[in-house]
Image (cartoon, rainbow, N blue to C red; front, top):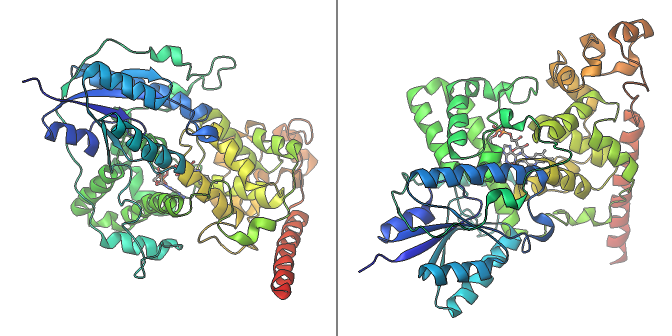
Length: 486
Ligand code: FAD
């Protein structure tokens, strides 16, 4: 009797190792039909943005090659997921579909709907874990409530064991006639090609993810605890896009860290810090699961009445890295030129947009969505809200980053600014974060012409800070009068 066929529906789990949904095909003794469907409809405005599409193209190419080398063929289809899945099941004889559970609200709704409709056609959709260390809902307070604060959440996570990663599933592949050609999907930019040079920066796909993890753990991790906040040094893992696209599972990262710790206890502090960052990723997904309106609405309802300004011209200057604050401009240009931005600088630029320019965090989250290769609905929404002050476990609103002080503290030599804002490259470090204070002779020697080749600050920090505090005071006053009226 022919072996049954199971359709494996790849989505943001573009790997073959430690993939429970694929492993389960092997356990069932079935052959696997590997499928990826490009269907932007259900995600709506949260369909992958430009930079993530660039990544997706290369990641799918890598996955297709990997499957090809093992004797299979990745089926690429474009269009309505239900229709495509039904057609592929019909053509292959599959009566079961496996996928990794996604946690974006739109995806959870889509899975739910497909589960019911496919069942009416006699096809079972089975969803497996695989994107997180702990599935949402498995880590709750003692009262059974979702955590709203990171530290107790992470402490509770640490008490839950993490299952060992699974080896690559040595599946039998079901081959079908080729589907779409990846090139025809036009996931890559054409004119202008803003991703020029990215091939040398990134290596999307499972092999690239494994290599980056190995490189990170072989060196930079030892300085991670202190160095992770210095954007001028390459001391963070840069694994976020690999994790977002599921080329690497978080538990693979986790277990590599554990193995390293066992061999070198001196790395304990650095590894604990790094693993806690994975914890923030878990926390973001957990929050999005329990508070699905997070991408649009403030987690803290007091911010519903925050008096945001709406000025597209100001935002444009921020997007282009022309604010006159070097650390902000360096970050925004790093983002545009590489699809990535260092975490410390993400916090500074986000704070500048929300607190100095009083623009709604949603504008910033949108821009990041289109420009980050790691754009991730959970991490992006939670991080933006956290910086804006409206998020879970956010710092008090009055803590407003001073972009000059942030630059001088975390980029003391100005290496990061010099790299991304080359027009300031020759300034002495004393002025590199405050060029407008440099004497004319210093500016002349460094070739800096204020308001010509580099702008003066678009807002004065002190005044902007006061305006932000006034805005916050108006929120508190509105709430107090609301309370009094009750
Ligand atoms: P590392 O320092 O090496 O950390 C390891 C991993 O932990 C990361 O790859 C990432 O998966 C996770 N991680 C680290 N910090 C955070 C965090 N604060 N929240 C959630 N996960 C974290 N991260 C995204 O993956 N996608 C986003 O869209 C995103 N948007 C952000 C927007 C803002 C305004 C801010 C302040 C942060 C955002 N982050 C986002 C979180 C963080 O900046 C990136 O995950 C990190 O910079 C990625 O670099 P890395 O892989 O070198 O991180």
